[in-house]
Amino acid sequence: EPLFSLCWSRGGEWLLSGDGAGTVKYWQTTLNNVKEVSPHAGAVRAISFCPTDTYFATGSDDGTVKVLDFERGTTVRLMPGAGLEAGKSHRWDVKHVEWHPDKAMLASASKDGSSKLWDPRAPREAATLHQHKGPVTQVRWHPAGRYLLSGSKDQLIKLFDVRAMREAAAFKGHKREVSALSWHPVHAELFASGCHGGAVHFWSTTRPEEPLSSCHGHGHASNAHDSAVWGVEWHPLGHLLASFSQDMHTKFWSRARPGEPRTAPRDEEEATEVGAPFGGGGRGRGDGDVGKGGGKGFA
Image 1 (cartoon, helix red, strand yellow):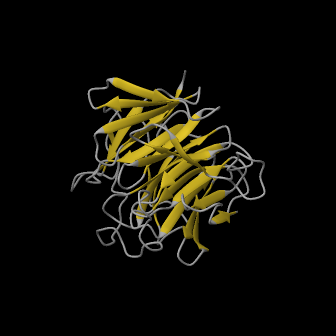
Image 2 (spheres, one colour):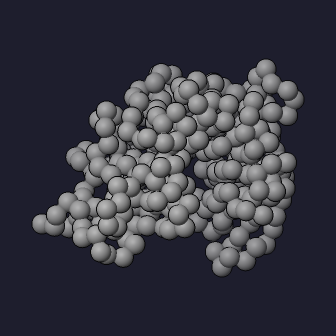
Image 3 (cartoon, one colour):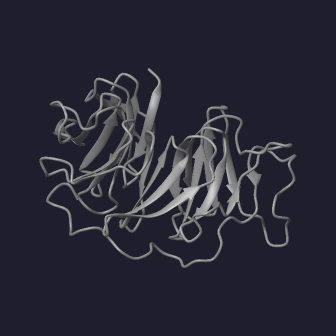
């Protein structure tokens, strides 16, 4: 079965994978497959661990968001959506799910055009967000937990202030469906995005009107990749960005060294250097968190 999702435990000791048959497999760091469970009737599109690694959440094409006990591999909760048929979290496929950095809260994105916030202990979703005019493909919590970033087929990226329950900013720059998002691990206001057209952009929350910079491939390529970008992820220190694509390539991007031109020569290997996309801004995780401490077990 094709693989649709991967997620490391927060402690770095386990890797979970989700496939097209609805199966989640447990992998050790040696890549030994030691366990598998089948919580879904459709492809597992996303997996996310809770802050303590005791539980993990999954989102699937079967329209459900579920919370599973990691050790036992059993389903603890199916997140039931208000006004939906029994056993459904969204009206359509769930495209992404992510656990809050340190609270008992989940965010999910769906093909039905909505994002939802969930408390794993509550009988229904805490909030439903209708920020986009098309399917929502990605949701990413800011490391400080106050903001939620979402990407959509409507080519927009939205920043939502969860504490104030309002949209904080809209980012316009992609010409195709937004398919990947990743917050910078050091500079609190910066993030990267990728789209189905192959573009990879760098953004600042202080400048939503246009990207700070973009990645460009070899030769005369105008985009980072020749096909859809399926993921972008930062190195933990923030000095490298990795992007992977349907064009069968994984590329690594870094800032130019002092004194070098903004874009490196185009005849280098796949790891292409681009000009510094990271403007100013303070270090650290920013300020502001969402809500109170999580409940027993789920935080």
